[in-house]
Image 1 (spheres, helix red, strand yellow):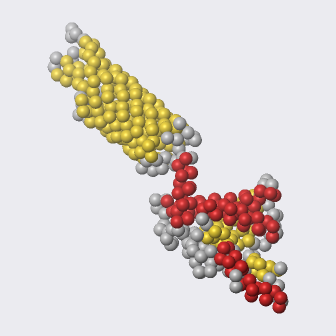
Image 2 (tube, one colour; image 1 turned 90 degrees about the vertical axis):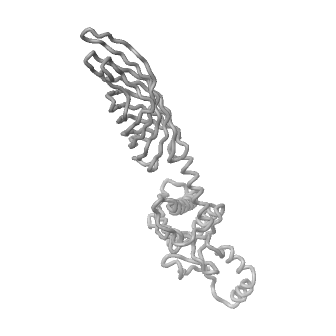
Image 3 (tube, rainbow, N blue to C red; image 1 turned 120 degrees about the horizontal axis):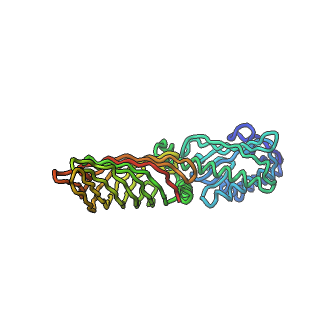
Length: 357
């Protein structure tokens, strides 16, 4: 048997050719009526779920066959065939795969080209085999090819991805779903625990600073619910009769929507929350006026824009700014009228670290 260049794979690709002769010709004619035709159909199936592989110069036959066998074993469960010939019905392959081996024999350059297929683009990768045992090199190459195919096809799910160049075959959809499931399993943690420094100012005259512990549970990649608890100290409010100081404990329920993927280094979103505030007023009288203390409960609803920057694998810094409206207002009064409190509307801001669990 001798090898000659394949006309459809270009320079450096080969297919098997039988030597000429009367006996061989008779054998070929006999085989063409049955067994050989069936074998060609198995290698180059009709339909759109197949890829064509071209192997360059410098490959021995055993390595070439091992690579093709391992590639078929990897793609067969995904209902994708591997072939070196054209399909009998003229259908275009899902991908043109080119394997080239440089002179040093240590690197295989795997080029996957998708022409007139699903994504209509070319992707490639150099795979070093220097540290791979001889027995595992064919499988390493096959796995690299499969990963390039998966990486190319998952781009169909990008929000701004170009439209597919042709209808997406069911086999490709199944591969995309397979990758999506793996991404979901290996995605960012579903829980977040954070500490936040707080600044809150009410138009009613109450300004508070403090801190809060926050917990978040992501229900899906874009939506989370959360709980928070913290304490605040109010800056003194003054009147002609003295001054009023405040301290507060708070608890909150949050609903968060992420506008960009949480896997990115930076993401933005919005928080809508309800805050329950237990506020203690302590009045100190001056110039003969008597002081006093009182405790009451207030409630406000808030909305805030937020941004988070990832500074390590599981650690980020988050900042937010927003507004709130009191549902149950709290106002301190002296004998002359209101002095200040939680009323009208408020401006809120926070900053602190977030740990993903």
